[in-house]
Image (cartoon, rainbow, N blue to C red; front, side, top):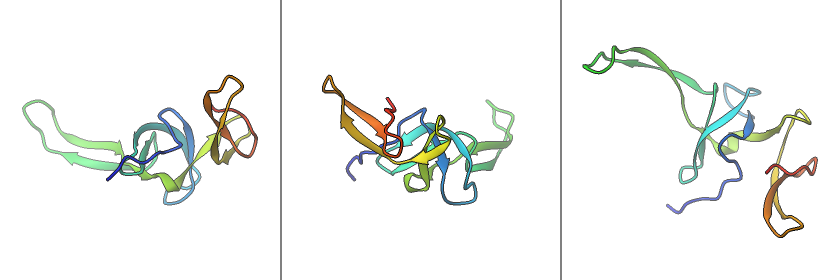
Length: 107
């Protein structure tokens, strides 16, 4: 499978738009472009039971699982709403991401 281009990047603030955690916001920890998935901090948390081994004591571990990129949207903290992301060229000719609803440059 070819590597897909995602508009979300690591450390972006996103809001979940579908699923059990709908309405929650969090920071993107990891992006998997080939699977079209993202891991969001504090969202889609599951419990995993680990057996004790020689190196760790085991027990119940909570960790975030990946979400499909279609179930999250970029969250603009200044406008306090979600928005779509687009690309445009700056005055100096560099390609930047911007929020389509407010027109603010993201990075």
